[in-house]
Image (cartoon, rainbow, N blue to C red; front, side):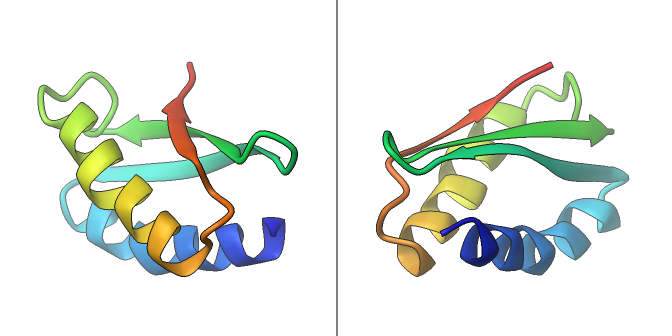
Length: 75
């Protein structure tokens, strides 16, 4: 599961970098299906970060890796 999540993060990363941000995979809890990420650069503290996280990152991860239940941003 973690390898699949990493592949999706790498797929998403260029879109965030185009806006001056970035994303780092922190952890994947295979038991709960929770993926923790750290938003960086312009994405950190951006008013649209929550929408990017839920409607972009989480949605794409769930499409590709059905085991993912939730994506959380950590500091």
